[in-house]
Length: 353
Image (cartoon, rainbow, N blue to C red; front, side, top):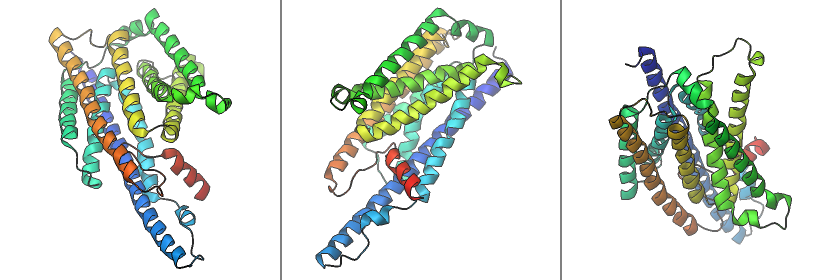
């Protein structure tokens, strides 16, 4: 029988995971709404400027000068997206990775619903099917998945040689790929990194996110010390979590500038969730305490949520790509449904606000 405190922590952890998904989904939707409004204003200004230029009214302010201003709606969306990291970290401390990863897939359902309600983007038949499959899989995984393993059991799994071997291999691969991905920035004549970026960049990003959740989960089993400086293990876990989180953010910003978003987001997402499933089931044996029926149901639910998330993303990315190609060459870029060009907007915010 599961201890009542464990059930309370599990319910709190799932609630925090859902809250994180809601905040990040709302933040991304508001960023997209702000960007779409800016693109519409840019089109109007370009058209009016073109008419003014044809009438030789060249003294008018140029569109680029008018674009240099803060966007409160986009800033609110960015703040909500960053705030979502707090309950996300807390949820991985309280709930097993396999459940949290299923809820992470459900975030795409929230994004689609908010896009339909706030942006008027009607989901396609494939997206509707993906939403249903993802929701069903998440619900099954949450209902039949593991609650929480004991501190002693987790400590045994975490200190096993295969976990250390996995962390060393994952860290080494990420470091090698990170350097390789930046070779064209260091050596201008190197073109290999640019050619293979569609493979390396999503792989590094997904790996950084998944590996950070190993340290995130471990923090939940370490007692909070009275003095952090006197507990090097706790400090190491916290620092590793922060560094990997910043690395993930940097790689996402880099990807918005150097890759097609409709290619990067699904690839990085699927790789990150797949690694989390591997970490949960193989490394930490989170399903070991369940009956065979619950193992089958929770594993099947997790796979269903991932399949639904894939089906949900692929059609909308293809449509977004087609819409971007149809836009005028005067518009520099168009946002994806799951996000916007953060690097471009952050640069404007720092320069103009």
